[in-house]
Image (cartoon, rainbow, N blue to C red; front, side):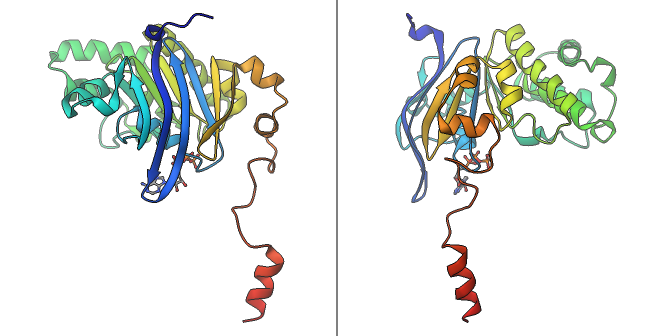
Length: 272
Ligand SMILES: Nc1ncnc2c1ncn2[C@@H]1O[C@H](COP(=O)(O)OP(=O)(O)OP(=O)(O)O)[C@@H](O)[C@H]1O
């Protein structure tokens, strides 16, 4: 397979990151090609959100390189980084809407903040984005009048308001019923393709993800431990992947947070 670096929108090589003394990422290599939707999966607290923040330039790697659209983030000035971040749409956990603003104003917010477009053009753009998520008729509603799935769709419309080249989702399916979950999954794919963008989503929802993504990375203990296309993942004999695909509570990702054996801890407390 020939791979031109132009095809790569995001590229991480040897990326390490620590919060103070606590090293969370220990050498991550990962790429996202233009047009791709990529999922990042892994146990709770393994560093998935941290990875998104590094790609978004909110955190800086302590070693290795993070490149987006051909720019190495570590070498960018503050202004250049800000300009690049404007071309990224982010939908963070639960994508909180501004509760005191209508659906329309929520979606208009990034356009008003980041552009000097006239009001009529903003109105048309907001309507197009709301139409893309099937909610053009809901523009006058307040967030309190929306179901969970509708609120998520409004957050999606807001995340794509500025036509980003990269959209990042942190747990886009969290807390949704199965039908809304399917709707959001299909929308993530559809919007990615309609915008000609690339998307990265951090998620625990393997079955929904395998339906819509092009590639999956599994993170554990600060490293990529498995990766592949949905077909490769489904067919994988890797114990780590198996635990995820079959939702086994215990396996390479342990059920228990590290602790002394329960016998010892109970005895210890009883002996006090
Ligand atoms: N600001 C911070 N300061 C110190 N430690 C942090 C900070 N943010 C996250 N951590 C720790 O870094 C580790 C990775 O966090 P991160 O949020 O990236 O994990 P995650 O894989 O997204 O987890 P989850 O799936 O539970 O959301 C966790 O152990 C977390 O406690």
